[in-house]
Image 1 (cartoon, rainbow, N blue to C red):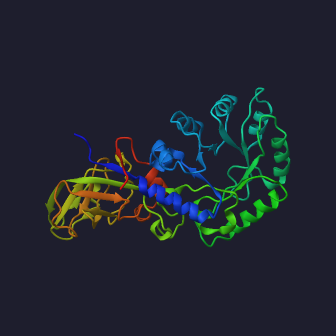
Image 2: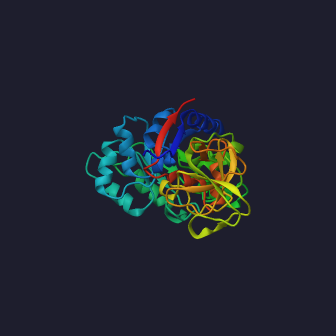
Image 3: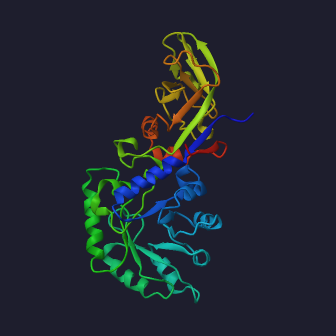
Length: 360
């Protein structure tokens, strides 16, 4: 039997969110970040839908190769760069741009086979302390990379914001100041802003912005939703009720009997669970929509099934639609209930969940 769990990908929403990014960017170029299977939305589907982006950002070589194999001709930037000569040669052959963030990558470019030519972005560690060169050596690394025969055009400059999800963070302003101080006087394209930087700090826009999560209709900020930012959810995760049971007061629901019914009540069973990517730690009370009405989860999430208190929708019956997040129910809200972030929800959809595109 085919499982009814589906992830609906709204192409119109994706285009809307790109337009919202354009509006916020105020003329800066858009590098649409499509790493991690386009945040769980389908790499090729999203790239084709967002063909008006100026470039695409990926994390790894295989993502860039998949885009080129599908005919994507726009610039593609490998945000983690390359890790071997073999990867460097593949990036060269497929015209992939690379981010350079470590000494061994510069050395690799300096020793690259004759005829190797790539565009490079040099990354400054302005305070996140993950990838990038610290300010103390950044100028020297820039000179070496600029003199490298394997690098075409002018080396572009990049950093990454650590606290852009916190709209009042002083650290963002500090990182921007560090970046500006260490790139002053260099004539090169610059990129600072991720989604949070784009929406929250006009001074982070620079020449290129790198929206990721906002393209999928989810807010980058910790205290609101995509709707608050003028975005539209691009993924709706849905399933169906497969059973409705009448249980009595005192009955225990699910593994471990962690939920005890306080009265006689209808319990719905929906065909989705942690085997599909729904968060196992979502507690009782986490909302779902049953035919558009909010109903709370009860008991533990199991591999294939969840149980739902149907008192808010007593007419519910097997076959009725259940929305886990997306249309009418922000992923941000579900994530908060489950003690995680919306990024994790949308990128952990399991392969057995069907995908369907809508373009209403």
